[in-house]
Amino acid sequence: MQYRKLGNSGLEVSVVGLGTNNFGGRIDYEQTVKVLNQTLDEGINFIDTANSYGKGLSEEFIGKALKKKRHDAIIATKVASQVGEGPNQRGASRKHIMDQIDKSLMRLQTDYIDLYQIHFPDPETPIDETLSALDDLVHAGKVRYIGSSNYAAWQLCEAVLTSQNQHLTQFVSEQPEFSMIERKVAKELLPLCDKYNISVIPYFPLYSGLLTGKYQKGKPAPEGTRLSAGPMATRFLRQDYLDLVDQLQNWATQHDHSIGELAISWLLAHRSVGSVIAGATKPEQVIANAKASDWQLTESEKKEVDDILENY
Ligand SMILES: NC(=O)c1ccc[n+]([C@@H]2O[C@H](COP(=O)([O-])OP(=O)(O)OC[C@H]3O[C@@H](n4cnc5c(N)ncnc54)[C@H](OP(=O)(O)O)[C@@H]3O)[C@@H](O)[C@H]2O)c1
Image (cartoon, rainbow, N blue to C red; front, side, top):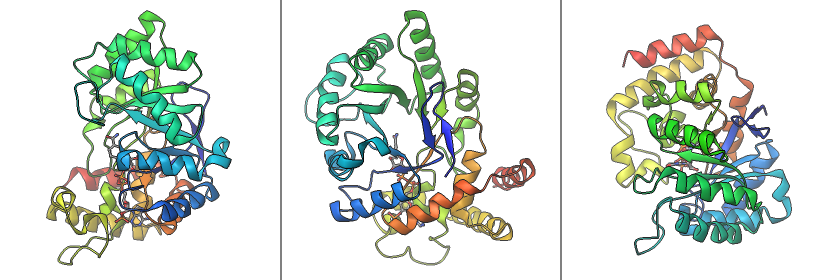
């Protein structure tokens, strides 16, 4: 496994990480333990969760499973999603952050969170209120580093400048949707993150599994897979995407790799990408995803792939 510094911090995170929004929803505790054990065996230390995943069960399962291995893992969690009824049950206000941090620490059975991320921007709360609440958590030792997620470039820029002007702890990472299929961040967010040395942590890096090649044109989705049913299938399983996947799979095969490895290595070929948090429901998927860490695309390989992407 390879490791990179997380943004402008001294923290080393594995370039392949683990996403855990399947925990407590699509997979139970027993399966979660298998996935987490395999994760640590592969040298993956970066584990991303949120207070809302599996209605809290994702954090709870991670806490229980990693209790005796807490220091082997870098745990990133999030706050700001709707977690209950009522006006203060979501967002990035001081009240909601202070209410939620202790709940996350309790579920995770730990006294510190490595990376505490604001899940979504909260346009109704002044950014200095959010940043000063996070700064207090860092000084209290409950949180070690802070990050954002789903921020537009201007919102992240506003946050960076506010932290600098008010001498508050700065975001070291931003977690946007980013993959070979969804590349909107390339225009403004990536250059911003390069400039301020903020790590990008791409979510949906495998486009919910589409970029592993297991969904094929003209064939039904394999049984039990994430996109075999439900509203996500409509969004992700588009015919034009399946055509692109075909081309990318051919290119990867010619280079003796799988399309899943390509999906991760292509993201890692972007300087600001810190860790690719691929979600997994089985230990075999973790093994396959970890293999991508050994493949560094050359500049000409990256260009060939970019040409394919631009043409669709
Ligand atoms: N910040 C945000 O707003 C936000 C939003 C979404 C996600 N996230 C985070 O980002 C993480 C990653 O996103 P994601 O898990 O939703 O999507 P993803 O990583 O693009 O796809 C994960 C799915 O791909 C399949 N998969 C993974 N490895 C595979 C392999 N080697 N072979 C075959 N199939 C494989 C699994 O599907 P099956 O389930 O079919 O086995 C898995 O559930 C999440 O877990 C979460 O931590 C953050």
